[in-house]
Image (cartoon, rainbow over all chains, first blue to last red; front, side, top):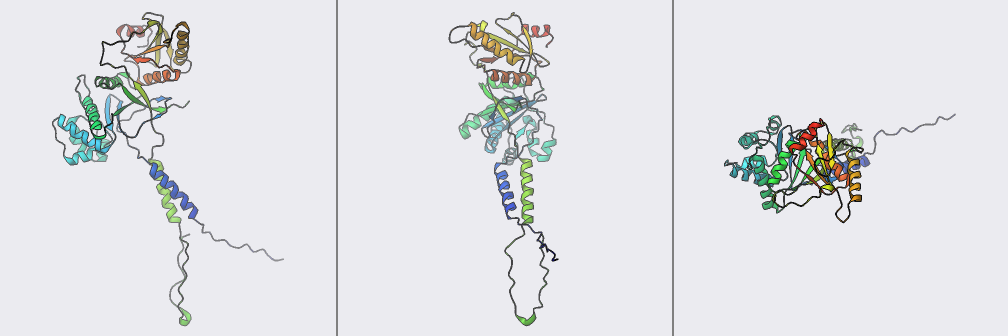
Length: 202
Length: 178
């Protein structure tokens, strides 16, 4: 009886197709990627059944929670111009380097008096820095009101757009914290804004 | 996989030097490894679930003297109390109140029922229900968002967020919701 000889196959695979797929996926993810920004203020957003997506530009976000308010605005050029304006208003000078460094900070919650110190920190230092939130008091010209007002002016001057606002509130906190922000909005005649929510699973 | 050229060099017998034909196949393993590593990195760092926004419109406060008359019989006043509880009534202050909670059988049902009732008992073009939401200091932001959401679901267009008054807080206190 003749034995059937099984031809020994090479263990090397053709990787071409796999490589193609891998790079296709890679390209897709690079193009769609928007790096996750670490929120300095941890807020647990409430759920709603709304499906409107938050726009990527022309928006300022106010994070409200744990009796602190943080402010964030999209666009590096807007941030730069905004800090310059705030410097003029509060009579403190920001160097071009400080403006450059500030333009990459997505959200912050420090009073004007600590801003120089905060900007001077590196990224790691900012994460551990205990940010007290932007001061809000009952007067019409508190710091948060100034940030909001100047941000609107800057957006209008630079991009000729009416800046939109979104509030990111912590679900478990009292309504009064949110009310503080809305009061400031209403004093400036902003009657339309968005509340950031997560999609409710039905 | 990783193939090494082990044929050794030199030692050509007969002196005839033949150039070796190199294979056009390249080992792609390392390239694929790298590609998948990068894919993993990008998957991990991207935000997949984009946050959703809910639009809010507040009444204009710049002209406090201009007030639209609100027919009391078409008004539903909703007070947001503590512990995710709601108190509501139809009509003027002092009407019998109802305590409710959030959810499908709670305020949503009440909103739809009362809206239907008001539309049935009122004639004319403007017979829709007006909802006044008055969040108390003890209510949470979540309650407030839920309330707006319920009104969106029930399709109530005319609504307003109003500051709570002392007698209304007293009402909440009476029912143990403050």
